[in-house]
Length: 137
Picture 1 (tube, rainbow, N blue to C red):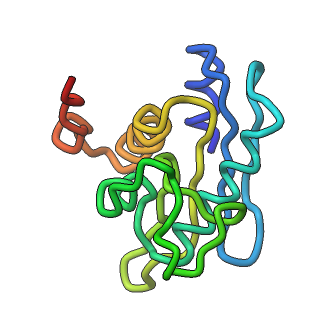
Picture 2: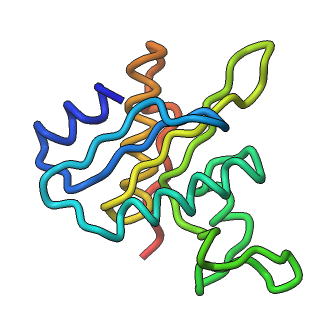
């Protein structure tokens, strides 16, 4: 959380960061320029990660839904679940997914990238190997 917050402050990123286990909050920060809707977007991203145990950007790519909602038959209300990048599962070897990191405030690929960059930095992994390919124009 501190890594993301420090980067956001240094780069003036108008984001919120919400990190939690499945039953309690661990870290929260709202940067200057973030707005009142960002926490709700983060909450909806967190719900998606908790339900599917996948990053929200992966879900976006798998679902291919321009309206950001799940298919009606899934029974997932748009007010509680959103297809938007920036939510990421926290996985512990031998334990599985134990929590979620969510970032909201930038375009979804950038929200996703902020989390990936922080995780790579924390784990000592070269993020270039994990970077998303450039968007098709």
